[in-house]
Each structure stands twice: as C-alpha cells, then as structure tokens.
Length: 179
Image 1: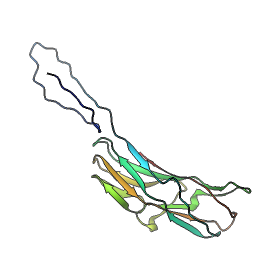
Image 2: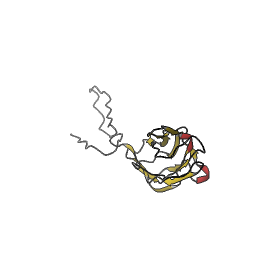
Image 3: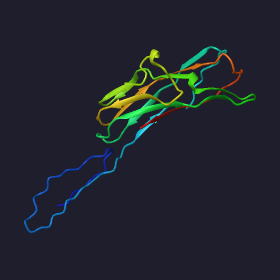
C-alpha cells in the first residue's frame, strides 16, 4: 500500500492507523514530522510625519495600520508584537537630539482581527500610552488558535522639550517586531 503525503500550508502531526504487523515481523517505530510551512510576520508604515511645533509643545499623529499575520501551524501558540524607538536627531549643524523617552505610543484597539484566540492591545486608550524609552508590548495574541491576524492604527505623541532644541527636521525610527 502506498501513501502519498501532499505538502500543506501549515504544519501538522500525522497519525495513521496501520494494520498490525505479523508476529514474525521486526517492527521499528516511524515518526513523520513536517516542517512549519507558515510564517509569523508584521508590516508597518514606512514613514510618518508629526508635523512641526514649538519647544514645549506636543505633536501627535496616527502612524497608519500595523498588521501581524500568523500563518504558522494551528498549534504554534501565542505571539507578542513589540515597538521600540531610536532617538530623534537633527542632522544639520548644529546636531541636536530629542531623546526617545519624549516619544509616547498607544496601540489603540484592534481595527480588525481574524481567527480565534484573544487579541490584547498593549495600550488600548490614550490614557494608557507609554514612552518609548524602552521596548514596549504593542499588541499580543494568546491561546493556541491557529492561523490568525490583527491590525491596529497606533498613535505617536512627541513631547518637544522646552530647551536644548533647534528649529529643523528631526528624524528617528519606530520599529515594530513580532515573536
């Protein structure tokens, strides 16, 4: 008897009922493991502008849609999306830096979700925003629920210091990652 195994888009564990071997046969256990076929990915906007403002003010803008797509095996488990930031630097002379602790982030609720499990925003409201002085949880998914995805539109809030800044364009990088 021949069995044909077709490649699948997700990892699975194969279990098959085979006829019992005859008493005279040597039997060795056989294990089949299919490699994970899917991926855990995150996409985010390439650029966002917070506009301009005077020293001592705050600038805020929604970043645009961030999406996590989990196409891994149905038993792959949870994921956590993390957000981090660099400092914001004016590269023209004189070089001036606004520290990343001046940038705040809040994920807001999910704009869309698909699949089972529980989707948890890192900061569901503006009142729960956090500074990006250190990496923060942006969004997470718990429970083993199979293929799923979540999207959200986070808000960035930059507090411009009262002193130590010079007029000009400041550039920094906000990075989303998922594991």
